[in-house]
Image (tube, rainbow, N blue to C red; front, side, top):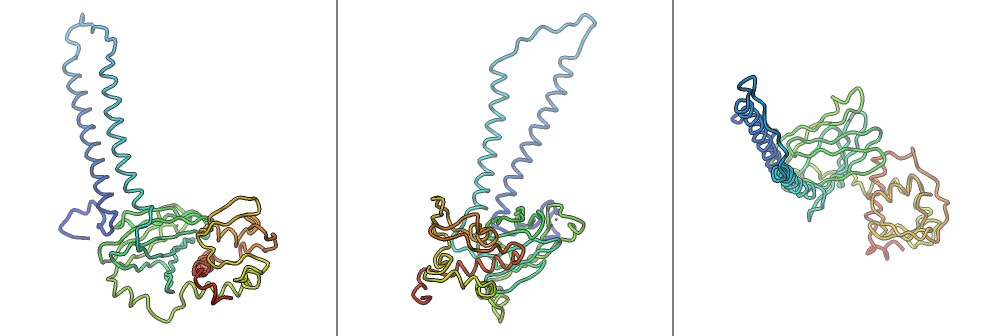
Length: 315
Ligand code: CUA
């Protein structure tokens, strides 16, 4: 924290921070302006229209359409303006910028587990490069948590059974707080960590090393759980081929067509009967409770890596 400035706000260390601060600042100024205006008006009227004698009776007022419309439409327009302003920032945080990298977060009573696609895993620490858009994909092993980095002005719930994502670009090298912002049990207040924003070269040095990538770990799990005995790359196994399946449109037995995103892949591992692919039988067992959320993310990373281009190599 810069000692020279009043610590009214946390440090501003992401692309979203100045935008969120500007909106919050404007909303505060508007609120203060109207609060003062209303109080001064009340005071002014109280004095101006005070009862001056015992016989003083006010005339009847029958209302004014112009006045009614004015005090309804003006606040409505102001609030709508703030809504549009906020929505712009919202869409920025939840739509994918070009060239983003991925980081996977698993919340668990009571810790934050982070996986980098290149391999490193960390607990209650998060290392990220500066000036690079990051896609966070998050899920909880148990209850609802909330991933909160004040310096980035980002906060998003981490839910059991469902992936949540957001995008942010850190803009300032430094060390920042990471909190859980959703009460999640006894040690909720201890579910904290540190975010390290590093120069790109430092980050590459930090990431590089001997650790296996998420894809390699996923591949190991894929054969450990014998997924590879049914999901043959040529599609002639008992299960459909997974080559190029990621983000493709899959036709189901029911005739429905769904997009094979992360949520679909996760569901198909844990609850295979939910969506049966056309021309295949419901023979896959469930892996519910057998694979951790981290493991699921690794398997999904492996499935994502099975590109169509590599099809010839597989066969
Ligand atoms: Cu996790 Cu509060």
